[in-house]
Length: 343
Image 1 (cartoon, rainbow, N blue to C red):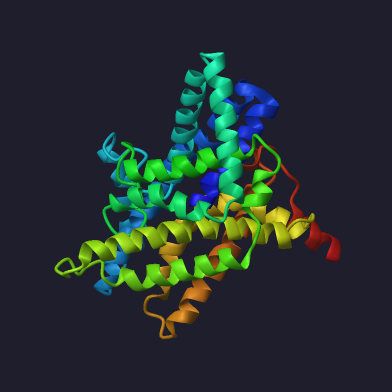
Image 2: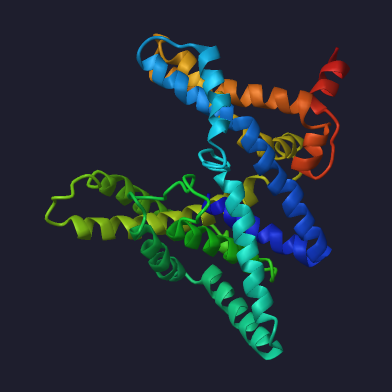
């Protein structure tokens, strides 16, 4: 998620700079606000019914129609629970964080001297953070400070309330702002994404430490519990920062040319994000009693989810008004055209 918010910040600033505030605000409402609002009403019953069937499957008795009716009946609780309880919290934060950044930018712009001084300072800071080998050790301190206040070891999922989860908000706003500031200059992103053996080593070390230290999360009576938690938050923060950097670097290295398959998957990714969770939940219930190894269950659920989501995208999204909302414009159906031409 940190990577997504960094990328969102980068392209948000690009859109604002190239197309202006009016177009930027319009795109936020159309491409994020509408999917959040409409998607919540459409997906909420499917998710609730999946949770109901999941509980029923533990007793060996699944009633699909009863679960669906309970999912629809959950709307009776409104306005309680409005826009929460789903994976769409990500869209809510994608509306909230840019709004906060724009407010700060507007306040800074009130004084030209402050604006120019602060802009220059921010540009120098971002350049240094992207180039310096010491930067990961510095940036992990504020990230670790936020991680300390999470409800568990790691990142919280802020899907329980529209009131922001402050530690989560600070981290995601930080990555969004970093992406936003990187777009002000040409070189920082390339420097940030540079792959070095030192960065790879730090990432592997931090990842291993994070996994090992997680085992102590429930051992509240451990004599060194606080030290272990400090170690975890620092290693997790370092892992977070280096993983984001390395992943962008790998994308630059292997996906720096036009690839029609990757372009199609990129177009479909927003739809896959919206629709995947109810499909996964329902498939988990369907596979629960199937007598095969868990690895095959996992692989089957992932493959079916992706394939079904892509089929739905091709048939009902890509060339329709839904595709215009999610992708910015309607696009021609690729898979169907390919099948027709091959036939």
